[in-house]
Amino acid sequence: MASSNKLKIFNDPIYGFIRIPNTLIFDLIGHPYFQRLRRISQMGLSYLVYPGAHHTRFHHALGSMFLMQKAIQALRFKGVELNKEEEDGLLAAILLHDIGHGPFSHAMEHSIVNNISHEDISLKFMEELNDYFNGSLTVAIAIFTGNHPKKFLNQLVSSQLDMDRLDYLKRDSFYTGVAEGNTNAERLITMLNVVDGNLVVEEKGIYSVEKFLLARRFMYWQVYLHKTGIVAEQLLINILRRARFLIGEGSTIKASSTLQYFLENNIQKENFGDNVLRLFSKLDDVDIMSAIKEWQEHEDIVLSKLCKMIINRRLLHIKIKKEPIDISKMQNRMEKVKKEYKLTDKEVSYFVFSGKIENKAYNKENQNINILRKNGKITDVAKLSDHLSLDALSKTVTKYYICYPKEAV
Image (cartoon, rainbow, N blue to C red; front, top):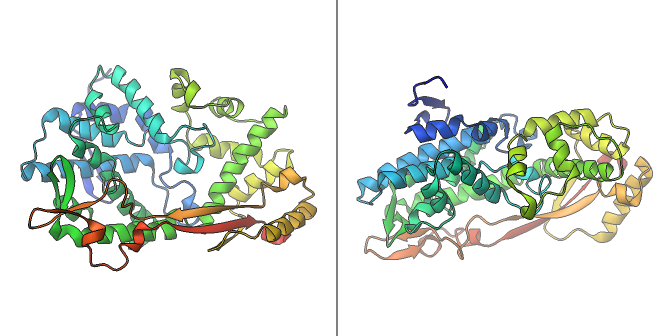
């Protein structure tokens, strides 16, 4: 293999120049498993709402690694002990934390495979890459799984104030144009410290934490749980569900060989072996979109209609309410759509359905964001904050939705 300069830089629209810190990171980025992230959208079908939201998991992984470099510098400056092995482990863990995402990120997490999360698949990728790189990711895997004796290392990768969240809020805010989601990640990182092996934020950074939590709440309601995005995501899930059903009935469904495999087989945690992992590594947004373009001309009216809705952005109508959806109203709409589209009872469920969405910006019961006060005491941010709404952010807000074709009702 031809040699190349392994200390390259990426020009990122959020942070400017991102430097590759070592040859292991360079080689990980160059591996086909990681390059696949260029073809996995960060925000699923949110570009149907926010046209600029075409950034990828590749962008996000590099940005998270950049913030981790800043966090390592900030903690070392304050005397926190971090050796070279732990530094490399942190950088590799955050770089690979999302490598297990399937097509369109969260939208299809339980459609391609069943009962296995993207975190589980990320771990499988990391274990295989560890074999490939002769054990170089052993520390990274210990950090990623929370098995490293220094707990703050895992908290930098996965907690309520980790480098993952700091990057995706700032990045998604930038690409959607939703300014309310923008956070001062650099200041928050500067305020980090470690006490008794756990990550804390110094008291003078409390207002930055409040802003971060509020930004997260705004982004969930305005972007991640936007009603049009919800409809598009559910249509995508229904398309895959219908394709699986038709294959089970003996119909011919054209798709890439990789997608075909996952449609024809029920892949779960128990049978997700090395061969399945390698097939999964070849699956990305391109497989799904090319299939949807093909299926819009399928003879099955349900599959055809669903695909055309996505391709032409003629989505279902959605209503969001504070109370559960009235069953009689739901059945009334189903009857009208059945008659209009000439569908069976089973078929109409692809076009008329309900569900719920939840938003909880801060979890007081798990991995608290702790503030290091000037007197040396550690206090949960929700107790210390004088912001009236911060305690409310720790309560789960649930809303209910119903989707249906407006022209048929």
